[in-house]
Length: 429
Image 1 (cartoon, rainbow, N blue to C red):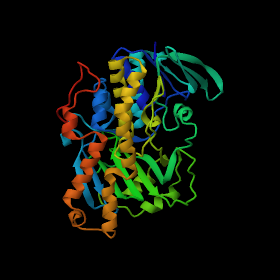
Image 2 (tube, helix red, strand yellow):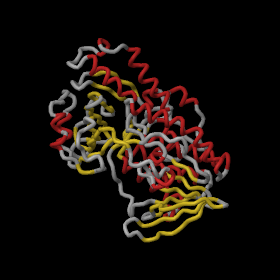
Image 3 (tube, helix red, strand yellow):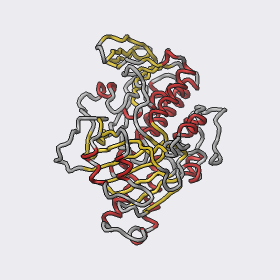
Image 4 (cartoon, rainbow, N blue to C red):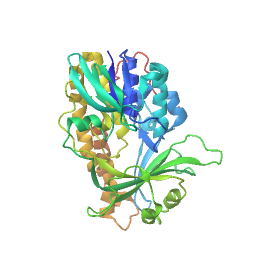
């Protein structure tokens, strides 16, 4: 029989490629009528890039994205707090990739259709119900646009990769309600602009309630000499602030957030200019969900944002979904298409991602910026006058440990899914 995958996002498509890699039939069911290259930029961390490389996607990633060289934290005045190398430069065997989310999505989608066939991904199929059967699971789908029946399919397992608004999770936890908004809003966009710092630097500036992140997502200049720069502006609003918390991915109104960043001109980066020159920017409430104590129910389990939606701190959302997909695949290889495989996957991934969800609520490694703001709100000359070197290193190392990408540990770790054809990175290339 076939493994049914609800959701054709990054996690679901990675799972489809991974199952195909070990000879397991699967099919992807996606709610929308057409999978378009939507979104803005994301970072894929070395432990997840490794998995995509082992799926044979390195050339496509290199052609479409940027190998991030370093991550640098700055104060709201543009003063350096902490810089650490990333990817190959940090000693990993695999790079960190900054890429447009839509581009990565289509790299995965094209590979799925090429390897599994055009009919392996069914669009306009929104999961409406599922039940365990003696030999697996039966899933019923509708076309959400028309409310018409889209068929019932039988499989050995149902994997819910259907995101933060997961239909599967809603049926498993009907009293949970909508995602939790904590008062933070993200405004996101992509601007054609000059390269900054090394040309492959990801920067974070500001502090807990007002923050700006940006990094390049094009590895060669555009015809006008500019680069595509992905940026995120964030504001933490008071709990009683009347915001459109129910709206997601709506077009941004610059007047509502640009004034907070108008004076952020660092010499090497004009934050207000990046925002002002963006042709299309979008607004997202920053949401997650409380961790649950169970993902697996018989022949059904959750993965990715359906299982552990987290704040986009530390560049971990897509990376953790990729890791989920690979661990599910390994456990199916070990236990077959059985509930035992899903339980073994959950036993490894649920505790790890629960820790990460909670750490991201405490701002992960970005807490260094808040500590600087609290200790030196009017600025500083040298960051070690404000924070000790040991404090800086401890925060960075603790996050890597929880997120699972410490350099030596990751480099020494065997592949999640055994593959005789897995290439290993050894240079910046």
